[in-house]
Amino acid sequence: MDLIYTSQQNSFRMEVRDWLRSHVPQNKLPSFDTDDGFEAHRAWERTLSEGNWGMVTWPKEYGGRGCDLIEWLIFEEEYYRAGAPLRVNQNGIFLLGPTLMEYGTDAQKARFITEMAKGNEMWAQGWSEPGAGSDMAAIRCRADRDGNEFVINGQKIWSTRAVYADWVFGLFRSDPESSRHHGLSFILVPLNSPGVTVRPIPQLNGLPGFAEIFFDDVRVSDFNLIGEEGQGWSIAMSTAGFERGLMLRSPARFQQASRRLVELYRARQNDILDLSIENAVVQCYMDAEAYALSTYQTASRLTKGGKIGAESSCNKIFWSELDIRIHETAMSLLGPYAETEGVGMKYHEEIAAWVDGFLFSQSGPIYAGTNEIQRNIIAERLLGLPRK
Image (cartoon, rainbow, N blue to C red):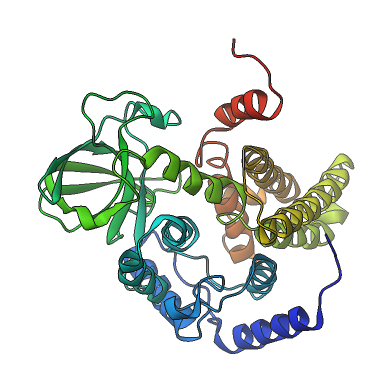
């Protein structure tokens, strides 16, 4: 891996920086788990699309720029440095988009990716079920073929962004005689279909960031089947690789958070009695940089034809636990001020952002596959340890 940027990469960075400087909203957008906030973030996705920044690695014909993964990492660094809004359509652009690029037909790519890039269609993820959380092989939600349609019955739960989304992608059991990871299909379902019911689930902050989805004889065209019928498990594992290993949580997210943590330490250091907090701040900063270097190494390998394998589980554990450490350290720095979210204080918005980030970080070891399951994968597939 060469850590020296080329002149072309440096020019790309400046182009990104200049565009963001001119277009990032001056005022922070409301939470995208509210009606107004979701629409404001959808409008931002459209602004990105107008500049062909929706997903820079996509081909130009689908609204991208044909960039490689190194340029994507550069884009992410500038994006977070500029304080740009979080991506409300992250399930689509970071997870489903790469999956469609690899497994979708030309017709499916033309139909879904362009609308996704424009922010016209927002996506939720439909993996978990009441009896199938981290163990996706236990999925029971059925998709029975009827001619050129699937009839879907069952339930999904913990579906991120489903309250406001237009579509959900997920795994469904298309072979009723199958078990475990066999007989599953990867299907896209419009959430306005007759027979679909979406019920919000409040997060720790009270906002409906998740939902449960009920399917009652929902008919879906087999055009929405990604890949071959019954091959959904292998396709979903590729999607999970994007989620855990590279796309969903770029290192820039944690680099920017660690920089904010250093700034918070400098503002509060005269009031700190526990000197071990200083060590925690430094460790968080170093870990964020280490994760960035590791991701650059992975990106370099992928650009040379490599694949993301079980090591994506290592990434997922690292970034999710790093996120918790960063925010726990921030809570230690804020002390009792964190309990009030800084009401009436000069820096109340910044303190509220730390508190909100702390609450969200608690979910990191759970979503994208619990860290306990990821440790099992590491033990079996990377270390070759026997099952108990």
